[in-house]
Length: 230
Image 1 (spheres, rainbow, N blue to C red):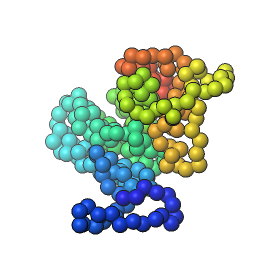
Image 2 (cartoon, rainbow, N blue to C red):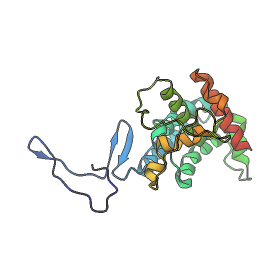
Image 3 (cartoon, rainbow, N blue to C red):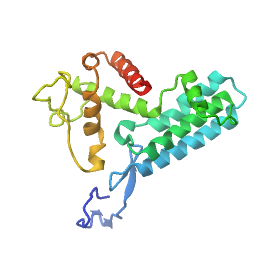
Image 4 (cartoon, rainbow, N blue to C red):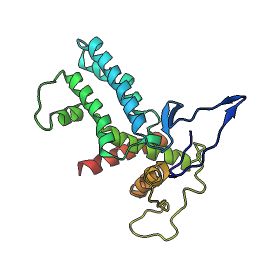
């Protein structure tokens, strides 16, 4: 598989021993489906299908269980499928975001055993009652937590050339802000570092100074939730 956005990519023949390797546009790697264009649509479709199948299994086998059991089944069997390595493939298009969120909404209806009400806001109220944050917010929180872990040396990510402190401070940026990475290519613009640096720079300064990771994660999650409520 060749990772390129060139309109006229160069083609070479690769061999493993005497066998010529077949060319492909996409392939799974460590549980994530990577394409030659670095587009995550195929991966999201695959994990959504798997999560829907698992949710269907839970509905068939847990339909008579208490609400707490149904909720636990979703959180431990379905949601992890939708969040595995999400810091790498976190989508930015509304279609992909909604595709994932719809699975959680169906799970909420299953927990409350309410499939009939179509009143606007019904599912939203279910999610609030369950205290389930949106999966989009959870992915943002996860990306920021990974960035903080990297800053503190807990993860071996190559941050040296990517995390450059802002040279000229302003009243709009906190003291731990980093220079944003600008690009016109969506596959880079919405990748981990360019996107997360923007999120990081928008955090309150006191949160960026929290070095205890569980406390940082909780503070970030609460901040993101408050921002979306506003």
